[in-house]
Length: 307
Length: 144
Image (cartoon, rainbow over all chains, first blue to last red; front, side):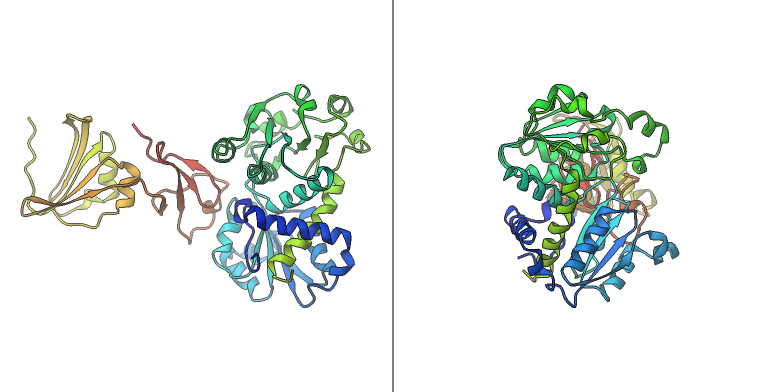
């Protein structure tokens, strides 16, 4: 039962509960009109303390396409946070007005903290370099539409695996499925955090490699998940500049990949995927963004207990 | 040889891993105690080689989670009339609240200060803990 629950971390829901969301997501794609009035009279609050394009707009569009309405703010400066209000107080206030909220915050654990102070469903829309579970919903829906299921596949993750919250959430999710294998491609400084490598991947016995080259591994992958180097997470600009162009996926590197290796990216991209790759049918990142709206529609419906 | 006399009524924390006695002493605020307290460092131990001991000539509240966190092998003896009336066996706690503070500058605990710092046990052998909010892993008191 997902009604009134919050999604802060992929470990908050069981496999069966996620299955309900994906099944509904696929049904919405097949017949979106059927759901166009499902959320009439309901209000979603989007509380974005940090900039966003896709996540905020896809949440807002999802609610509007369900017939609901949206309130919120898109930067901390335009909320009472600028006056020093605590996260707990802001959320308790928003709960007076809205039925469900999606929250993005630059500090890791902020949505978990907020969820302790409210009763309405809260969705983590990204907390610092930590987790981004609804991007994982987007990724999984896309993987299922392309290859049927997530099991028995090799996933490559490339780029900033240290601060890439979408990677952390996706790895955590996939680690619950049989036959998955990971290849982590990154500079040594941007490897996956210890809590992911040791407490999730190693503990669950998932085969994995940590490497610093792309080409030799391209033909082993079912999916290559590219990420940008997260400039906003660096305390030192020099480190960012040194690392930002370490891995760039271009046509030449794509030539090493199999015909059925799909390229995913949570977006926004900076330059880690050359635009010349965009026309390759294996590049699926814009379709991924579209799927994000549908799966967020499914999530909202489930958490509100409408479906 | 250094001699510390036995106590009539109070608490003896024995078999503390050598080097951690001062941390237990500080956590219990024994430096401000107005009763007799002894901190013995590097005492000979047949089993451990050397150990720290704290003798407290008073009955005080002790946070056993903290003691279990710092050294689950320590023993706590409650003394009355010069005799041990109770021995408390310590355990590595599964969850600790407001004992460890998260040092991750990106953690929400670095900017909001009105809620407890909570850590969950990750590995009993290593005594590693995970911050409830940011998942950062720390080993506050490494096994020596």
